Image 1 (cartoon, rainbow, N blue to C red):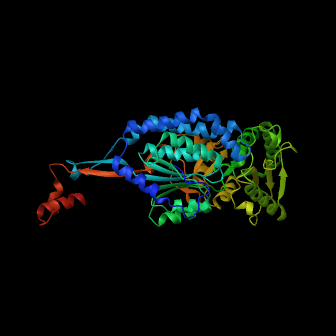
Image 2 (tube, rainbow, N blue to C red; image 1 turned 120 degrees about the vertical axis):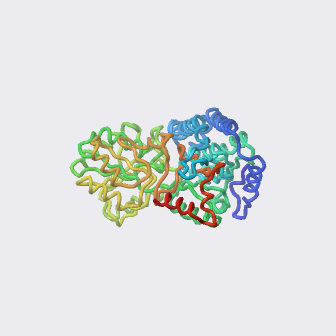
Length: 473
């Protein structure tokens, strides 16, 4: 079920939520078999519709590499579904908990109960994986889901609506399309939990709207994720990894390296190796078949404004890789920016495009200080084999997840939680942490036939005093 993409702010979403909530009360929590069947159907539909999904996403971007879509979206989603399917029995199993010594005749456990109805607000940059992995996690936890995709990807939204509509009833999974006003109304619904992926600025508004009904939120935001290159580390290796992380999907990745920190003595060599890595990955420049366009003209204008602001304030802006005069204007050429200062917008705003500011550093402590002077990022990358230096970076910085000697690949580890900290997000929804995030951990104590604590009931006497002396010893 879906609302019309041109829906007005007056659209009433409450009946959708009410129908799902009533269905949950009527049917109760789904069994392990039912949850696994849901996951299996979703997985099969993704495989069956691979070509259609690749084409729909490319249509929304203007051009996006079909391999990028299959690797970063379909492969990640299928792998995540497989993980949930395999480990779901263990996740659902009640956990025995410790009982205090004076209550040993009793027992304690935690049972993980579905929350009910979960809202999912997905962004445009990865419209499949960032919609369907929260959806799959919510279904694995036994919930029903309302899904609000971004209005910037209407083609893939229509296909997801078709696929999900064929798999699930509207009482289990419903899609809500619409513009920002519909998104605002969606974020104000009294869900049992709300998962939002997007910018920090919009995340603040979503959290404020959710607070009206005390709806708990998981916010997957972004920020300026740094990459630090250790002095002496292979620049061929580092630059190949940074180019992959920075330029996949045209740089429009929430965990893309936002800026690089390179030792001042290796700055010139880094730039040479970085350009060589760009040419190797995209031999026809921005006209390469595997190079993804910027999503729309508005976002392209924002990126160009960042460059113009930096250039006007003294930065050096250098386009790299091969020129492609015949490339579409939104196939933005990879760019590096040197001499960035704190008065430039690019120093503070998440870039979300194929632009890499490069900062020199003299000591590793200085590089860590540069990272820590900014809001906490969603990801951090370090290239270097020295274990002590790795430990220094891990201990000296606070971020979301970390990949050492690579980029992005922490998100492909299904058994790791994925989430930010501080300005880059709240909560996580991968791994068992995701299942638990979208479940209610219900603590249960079963009092034994012999209950020593009855001695602590009035009227209090000598036995109560003795028991208190034991407890408070």
